[in-house]
Structure formats: structure tokens, C-alpha cells
Image (cartoon, rainbow, N blue to C red; front, side, top):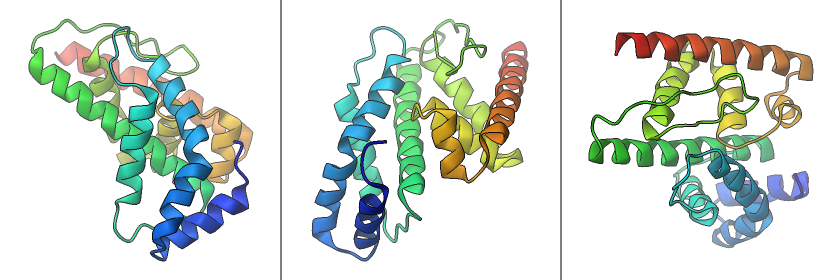
Length: 192
């Protein structure tokens, strides 16, 4: 991550305190990193994706800064919130597409890949989201790790720092999450 951690933390504190100019300063400080994360995430989407990384960053940023009484605990918390905002935007778009295209065939999600890359249409994004929501009810930290890895494109070293865990623990959580999500999505598909 390229922006100085203390600068971002200082700016986030100013935003929290209501400094209107700090919001513009924040965008300038984190834009390139958010743009890179969005590009990585959108690169995992199926061909024909119409949402551009710039649009995803702007929508996520508007949602983040528009939240009343937001108090990020620092840079890591902000980027985790950004990953969650991007996730929600992509899920909303997928649900919108599903409403327009009821009955489309589902395609396979390859959970063996390092990034849980989605190979199919929007229904697969929704299946992952539903499974991830259920995982979050059982283990919030593991679900947060998956969100940061899958939706923000962060690597396990970055996620370990953000979550305050060791890299080995992050590796174990990632292995557990992949197996758990695979089982849950497979179970969901069998029911359908």
C-alpha cells in the first residue's frame, strides 16, 4: 500500500471530526490504492462486465464518506470498509441482473484458485455472498478475511496486518474459509 499510514490515519480522524476538506484530501490519499483494488476485483468478474474500476471506486467512496458518525480505527479499518462497500455494490448489481434474467443457468465457482475467482454470471456472486453472510454469523474474523481477499484483492500479509493476526493464522483462516465456502455453496446448489 503506497500511501503513508499515518497520513491516512490523520485524514480519517479529521473526516470523523467533520472536517469537510479532509474528505477531499482522503480521496486524493487513497484513490490509487482503491483503484488498484477495484481493478483487481473487477478483473475476476466474468467477461462483459460493464462496471469500470473508476466507477466502483467512486461509488464505494461515496458510500464510505456518506456514512454518518463513521469512525475508522485507521487505515486498515478504512480499507476493510472499502472492501465491504465494493462487495455490496457488486452484490447489488448481481441481484439487479438476476432480476432481469430469471432462470439463467448457474456456472461453477472454482474455490481452489487463490482468489476465489468467479467464472460465471451474477448468480455466483450472490451464492458467494449468501455463504459469506452465513460464515460471518459463525466467525466474523474469517468472513472479514475473505471479504478483504475476495472483494478488495488484498494479499494475506496485508490482511494479517489489518486484522492483527499472524501470517500463519491468516493462512489457516484462508484454508478454513475456502473449505467452508465450498461446502456451503455445494450444499446450496444441491438444494436447488
